[in-house]
Length: 168
Image (tube, rainbow, N blue to C red; front, side):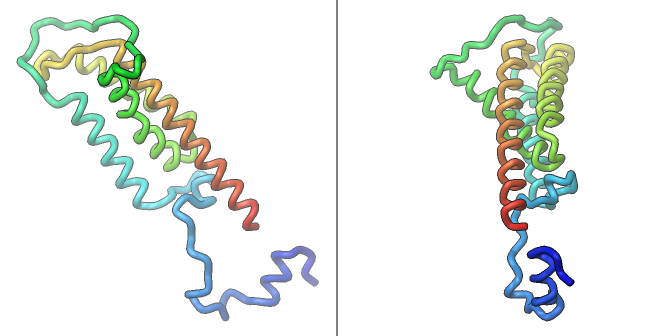
């Protein structure tokens, strides 16, 4: 004898008799992400594209090789008119968001984004042949972007979980 609403619905409408068109489509961000399983190929492709964009924009040779190895220490200018700082923040938002959705672990995505930014700045400081300048202000703004992306992933996962509970 069915005890709950779900069991009663299953007994009344077996899934084998339902035509494929009447089944609800699976949402892009489903409970699979909440349980730690991969969300789909789309998020993998978008994550790879975002990572390629970040690495290309930060490590592609820009100027003549420098003979100096080092890093400029300082805090970034976070004024609304500071285009470079805003661009650095925005650069890491999609990466952390997509990684947070893909892994269903936003905190790990934030940590990974901050670590990736530190590695990029270290490469810019140590590989003089690419003509890039290391700046701790860039690391700070990239880290802010990683935190924003991770928080957006957390919100999206919470929303998906709430919708999954409501549907159950």
